[in-house]
Length: 306
Ligand SMILES: Nc1nc2c(ncn2[C@@H]2O[C@H](COP(=O)(O)OP(=O)(O)OP(=O)(O)O)[C@@H](O)[C@H]2O)c(=O)[nH]1
Ligand SMILES: [Mg+2]
Image (cartoon, protein in one colour):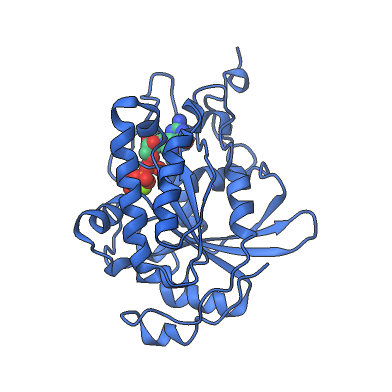
């Protein structure tokens, strides 16, 4: 069987300067050292807010416990886009290509026998105090319209500290986010032994988030990973929605398979997630939280309605 037929397992070296990864197979080999995402490769807050004043930009706040699939989602979106496999949208540009390369580089080298679950590396940041943003610009095929997106790849420890210690200081930037992705680990919900606890932790995260988010609330999307191992349970979604309703948040659902070892296509659900994200209909509040950079505060004036 040739590589392309192997249920999407991996791919060989790049050809013609493009990533040759078959998303059906993107798998990461363990690098020798733990890579950190240097803040110089991502966009800082000032740069991000400046972009938001110039162009129609959607800032996404991405939260989720360690291993929930945050980095894998960004890597998968980047690989899909760079290979032209993104339904409804074309890749136009990115101001943070090196950062995307950094988080997805391991997917270039996979050899049979590597541990299948190890696709991305636990996120650590050189600057542990503030978020750095990844950026891409998309062109919507149906009308040629451009959309800029800003997404931070944050360590799961930040969300853990938010749940366990109500440490919200590093999430002040969420005041400018038009959409929130609440990432949860699909594996934990697929297992009867861990499902209850995973649901409880997700409810707690919703509760903590409610204390940070402005009113009216940005769109909140529950994004379960590992859709390749099964559907997200409806009862868990209902409980998380109920927690959201109790705090004035309507929570949509967009399950994804960033990678896949089964029947589901790798990258499944990601184009839909981006589509729902870009088609939000809310104006972002024109303020910046008080404990943030006051220079940036005056810059955050933009409309996010499509
Ligand atoms: N098969 C499959 N693997 C996934 C999926 N999402 C994540 N993974 C794998 O699950 C593990 C954890 O995913 P990460 O994206 O690194 O998790 P994270 O939320 O960024 O974790 P931290 O950086 O520690 O906060 C990695 O080995 C991923 O490759 C998915 O949808 N399908
Ligand atoms: Mg990560």
